[in-house]
Image: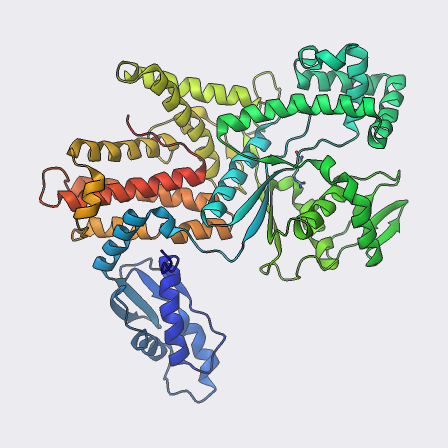
Length: 586
Ligand code: ARG
């Protein structure tokens, strides 16, 4: 509905803003500082009094210190049905206790109008999320898996917040490696025009072979280098071979995306290639591009190496493409927020690209203004041995194999629990996929992305602790409580009234209402782990409620069923934002 005001925190901030304008009319630039309470003094607190005091002290204020400012801030809050009571504590914190009937009403409204009611409001209309972005002919590895999972989740959160998201796969489809790949194809598969896919078979092995030839055979190397020139010059035969090689990779990538439920649109490096000269000309006209050791570079403040935009051999590189892609996204696609998801190893590259864009005036100097670009970096995936995650044969891990194993293991666990007797074959398959893939995603998302994380199937597939399995089961159990009541929940929604009289009901209800501000924080700080933590705590609060507040057959049954349903709805929305498929029975 149109009168929804955004997150709880924002609604309170509005009330305190009004109070600030009345309490300290001279301080027009002061913004309300509202945070959830950590102690037992209230649900939320406003922390403005302490920082306001030094500002107004010298101006002959009537107040005698921060606690008095706090008292006045409290007194001047416009009356609101949100608030049950307020108090001032310590040096001037204003604590707010929310009205439980207002919390209950808000939850009922969400149940009636849908979870979209609780979508955060962001100040951006269109964003680019550049994620996954593997390189053609090289295997998509666990780093790309992290990028895919994190990027997809960020895109989902932005989309839920009504931002139009351009999901971009910036695949590495344009580089010198294509020379050797194409020459190797011509040599190894004379009938490549009709039979490349079956003949190449394994593109990664094919890449290795051609790399070996390139390194060992001088004549081949020379041919490969000439092939790059022909390809980039548009020679039809070379273009065709390139297209075929890209297609094979693409099909492999798509299978992974499909299994993970990820949609993404490919605009690879080659797409931007024709725009590079024009963009470099613009940068040149601005006086940004200089000559350095035969290369064309952009010097940047605070970075000891320049950004090379034309190599000394006259060729373009990763940075020329990224400068061009950034220009394209800002000017052609009119994106206001551009988000790049790669490992932290590329931090410096993006720092330099963004700095160059600021020098060009494409991006504002202030990082928090729009249009805005952010690098979302993430740490390494480690194996049990604490080293980079690899398989036994020290090869990189194939994503398809990894997903297979996750599914096989979760299917085995279901069969061990005797589910093969209760579930149809199709249900077993779907549940095993939801749990297996969900576990892989959640294990990745629940950590702060900047830290390295250890990949461990046993841990991620455990039904105890902060895992997808635990959360998916918790959701399924809530659904079964509702089913067992024998009530039609749609009817209950229309007729029953939610009340939060038991303290554990109130805690759960308040936590439900905090969904919006958690999604908002996860979005604006680009940290999906914030949402994971929220979800895990939600499940813990539900458990506490359910063990102290019996539902079925009790006088409170209808109200408590509504609380069960609201919890299930919010859990499902969290799953959806994390790219996890819920299960309804277990
Ligand atoms: N292809 C690159 C890699 O595998 C990632 C590309 C990220 N996106 C970008 N616009 N540079 O490392």
